[in-house]
Amino acid sequence: MGDFAEELYRVLLSTSIDVAPILGLILFFQMAVLKRPVPNAKRVILGSIYVVIGLALFLLGLEKALFPLGELMAQQLSAPEFLGTEASERSEWTSYYWIYIFAATIGFATTIAEPSLIAVAIKANEVSGGSIKNWGLRITVAIGVAFALSLGTFRIVTGTPLYIYIIAGYGIVTIQTVFAPKHLIALAYDSGGVTTSTVTVPIVAALGLGLSKAVPGSNPALDGFGLIAFASLFPIISVLAYAQYREWIIHRK
Amino acid sequence: MLFKTVKYILGKLKAAFTDLVPVILVIGFFQVAVLRQPLPDFGDVVLGSILVVVGLMLFVEGLEMGLFPIGEAMADALTRKGSLFWLLVFAFGLGFSTTVAEPALIAVADEAARIAASGSFIGSDEAAKSSYSLGLRMTVAFSVGFAILIGVLRILKGWPIYYLIIGGYIFVIIITLFAPDEIIGIAYDVGGVTTSTITVPLVTALGVGLASTIRGRSPLTDGFGLIAFASLTPMIFVMLYGIFIFN
Image 1 (cartoon, each protein chain N blue to C red):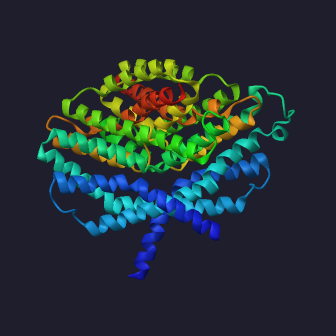
Image 2 (cartoon, helix red, strand yellow; image 1 turned 60 degrees about the horizontal axis):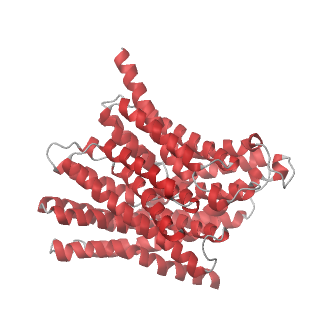
Image 3 (cartoon, rainbow over the protein chains, first blue to last red; image 1 turned 60 degrees about the vertical axis):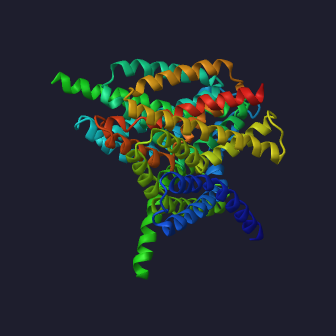
């Protein structure tokens, strides 16, 4: 238990430093620019204490659960015994199909349940005057993320360069932007950012790095990244496509 | 009174737990149906998940209680004060400081440092690792601050968002050509990492608040887009950081 207490103390100290800039910003603007005392100072102080303790516990739990989980799943699903291949040889990319299925499932499930996406979907419904359906958008984004993570794990297994995929993705987004309904563009761009929540990011990052450690001949430092980048890019494409599809349906009537 | 408090805390815990439910379901299904073996280190994972849920609950509660209301009130007060300079300084400061405290970024930057050390791109001692991860986080925080500043200017001037985004894409592609391989992967990833628990609600509140105070701007179309831009600039600046430290 002594180890844990020491660890907690160390993490608490560093999270206090992490939260300090926010407090500094608030204090500076209240004192120097707005020249007013901080309203509800008590709540601000208590809130900051919660933030520091919460952040510390989260980071401790992350080390114990989320990171190991992502890596464990990658290891188990790419283990030679599971694949039924020899340990040292590089297997065909097709033999890793459980990894692709796992990546797609975890992407879909976490996105469908993502609270900030639900909020965005409700707003999108308002902006579009009802042409964007709440569930339609959520499923579209979730499919985007599921496809992104599958493709991302495929890329790690094959070791193809990341930037080719990203540049191709940018090309598609740019072309879609020209044709998409203008008032929905900003929203579609934002849907890429909101999919990757605080719980999902560490698991997905660890999944990629763990997979890259397990695939023979792959270097985690060069090949292990990219899953999160894909997960923020592909929802933009799927949402722009969905917006255009809805527009087309409505105009056809 | 006590009963009410307990009920309140349970409600909050449930909300934090909801984030974890899909992960538990998917991993549980794969362990039982596909891998057909118990999860290794099950105890540690359970303990860690409890810490994650309780930590996330306290974190969000603290934000909603003390920091979000004051952040919104300040954005509002600054807009009405009408000083462009201070509004922009505030926008930068908000993006910077919230990114420094972003939990997912702290986690990913530390992991990136560990991976970079194991690939011997940087020294493997603690000092080298923590300076690399701090460097990454500060670069990202600076770029998010910069993005929010530009985003606020965009709302004020009414620039279309797609000019900024596509311009950003072109920048990313050009810098990729010059960036060392060691940084490209992590640079692309941090873009998605930056915008999570703290940054998204605060930034959306700022954007939507600004767009509703300024005449002729619609909060629904002009208020969005800040997050997208804030996930693009870190890619550019982190690659520049990589060019700086690896070359």
